[in-house]
Amino acid sequence: MPFTLDIDPVVFALGGISIRWYGLVLVLAAVVAFRLALLEARRRGIADSVVSDGVIWVGAGALVGGRVLYILQNELGMIGADPFHVLMVWQGGLSFYGGLIAGLVALAVFARRRGLSPLLAADIAAPGVALGQAIGHVGCLISGDSYGTATTVPWAVIYRNPAAMAPQGVPLHPTQAYEAIALTFLFVGLWLGRRVLGRIGTGAVTATYLIGLSAIRFGLFFLRDEPAIFLGLKTAQWIGLGIGLTGLAILVAIVIRGTSRYTISMEGTQS
Image (cartoon, rainbow, N blue to C red; front, side):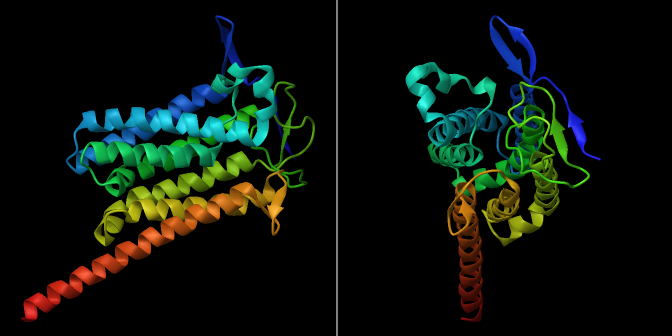
C-alpha cells in the first residue's frame, strides 16, 4: 500500500522568510560531511583550519553552481519577473550536478592555493560528500523535489500537502529515498575501503566516488519524470556519463602511474 506524505515543506516563518525542511536538512548534511572530512584530514596529518577554510570555498561554489544550473534548466523565465528569485535557495531548487561540478572546481582552486594536491583534497572530502548527499535527499523527499514517475509498487509515495513540489494524490516512485539509500551504501564502501583505495594511489577514492555516483544517478533517472533529450537519455544521464568517464579516466591514470613507478623501481633494483 502506498505511503502518504503530508508534511508541510515549511517548518516555520522567520521575519517573512520561510524556513523549509529542505534547507534545514541541507545544513545537517553539510555538518556531517564537514565532520567526516575533519576526521579523514586528521588521519592524513592535515590541520583542521585547512578543512574549515576549504568548506567555505566548496560550500559557496556548490550553492552557486547548483542554483545557477537549476535556474538555467527550469526557471530562467522567472528571473525577468523577479531577479531576486535566483537568491531564494531556501525555497528549494538546486541542481545536483551543478553543485557537484562547481564544488569540485572550487575545491581544486582552494587546494592549489594551499599547496595541496586537488586529488588528495577530493579524497578527503569524497566519503563525507556521499553521506551528505544521502542526507540531503531526505529533504528532497519531504519537499517533493526530484520526484519519480507514477507507479503501482507497494512502497510508492503519495503527496497530500499542497505546498509540496510533487503532483498531488499520485503514487510516485520515491526516487529521493532510492538515491539516499544507494548513496549511503556508496559512503560505507568509500569509508571502509578508503585505506585500500589509498594504496592504489591518490585520487582512487575520488575516482570510485565519481564512478559510483554516476552509476547510481544514471539508473535512477530512468524513474525520474523528466524528458529525454538524445538517444532516450535525459540531461542528467548525459552529464553523469561524463562524470563517470572522468572518474574512470582518473582511476586508469592512477593505475598506469603506479605501474610505471613500480617498473622503474624494479629496474633500478636490478641494475
